[in-house]
Length: 93
Image 1 (cartoon, helix red, strand yellow):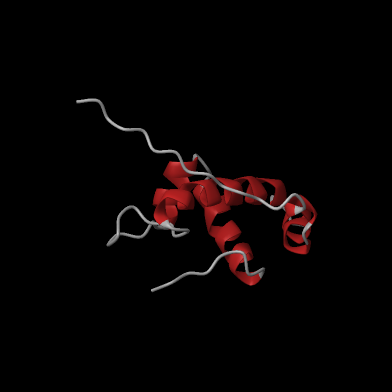
Image 2: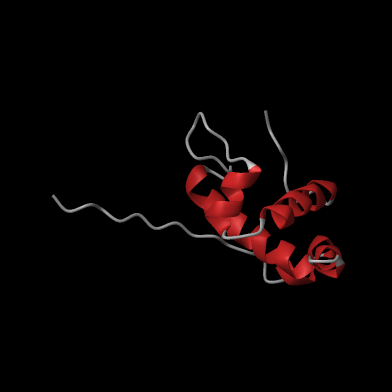
């Protein structure tokens, strides 16, 4: 039996890269890498109702996100802190 393909869409505002948060983010050391990592996280969250998780019971940790996005784990750690500070990411229990 042939597997049905499912497509998801990510819509960004046309001024995404001009927003204050993204401009501040890009101005940081490694900021361009943070912005690219953020886009990868947004794309990954599309098929999980905007949440980052491996399954309903297993959220991603920093090492998993590093592997999944092919991003250095140190960049992942510092980017997540920056995302939280700028209101771009919320860590839930």
